[in-house]
Image 1 (cartoon, rainbow, N blue to C red):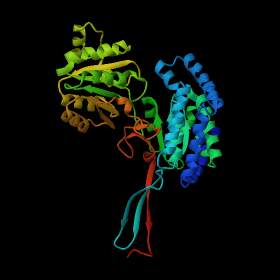
Image 2: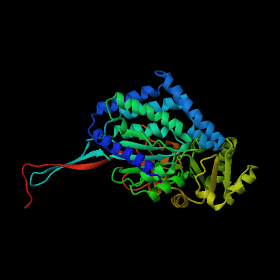
Image 3: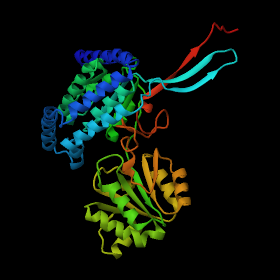
Image 4: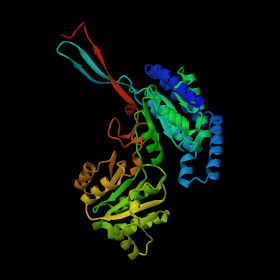
Length: 429
């Protein structure tokens, strides 16, 4: 690793740390002003030149992606369009409209000796976000870190380097125009993997790392970082169609969970159908999925049912039932009972997002209590596990960890807390 690269990343982290101390006490109005300006810069109705520049930069990345033969799902995650940019701007506005979590009082007690002890939310400090071909993450993370008083160091993938660079320039412009330090959000200006390795060792300057991307990236970060990492390794999400499911609802939910956007972590990868409903429901669900070009990888029971109805299903391999496909592929199984469905999900899912479709409230309650995942849903698509859909504004990620944060990570999840103690001359005897 070159000394120049080490110095580049270290200097960047030092500037981020200095900026974080300014942001920690920045007034809400200043943070909101920066967010409002960023939304304007992203809004083609107000500044079409900004959007045009972003789309031009994105086309450079897309041309390289096609040349390097990225998958359709990868290209979809990388692609910007005017509607997607508008959605990013709307996410920024939603974050600006949310209450500022910094300084929020969590608890207050007065001790017998008169000491007043307050527990209040404070920013974490400097947050490093490592991500792949997802340029929307640049804006999402910048907005959430800014509103929660944290400095952000962004390290996007090489696939989206030109797009991220253009977005980072707009963010710096918005910060400066609001009177906040431009160093509060910085993009590592190189795709060299050694820069990431350097960043992951700067535990005196960076306080938290959040990786967003494929399992190999997240494992690399977790295994090489001396900084605490908030992570989810993969999104193996299930939809369980119970014996008492409404057929129309089941079809809508399964289709939406699988095909609405198959290349994202909250898309359903696995379908479980109760044996008591499989003969009637599974052919209908399979027809709907096959019509959307979904390849079905079936266990013997589901394959036999589909064969009776002349429906195409491929015999699954064991690994197919715990794989994050991120594509139009779905594992299909018949399960004998609700308890077996719960046990199967707890064994084979990634504890990310799992749903039950049923009219039986007692069965739903057992499922919601028994499935050990970050988000569980009753009669709703897995695609709703999302900070925007939860009303958190944009999210910085979806955590499957069990410490500090779990599920969509919004503003409050980007804060720690400290104790503020007020006395009147007390000394300890």
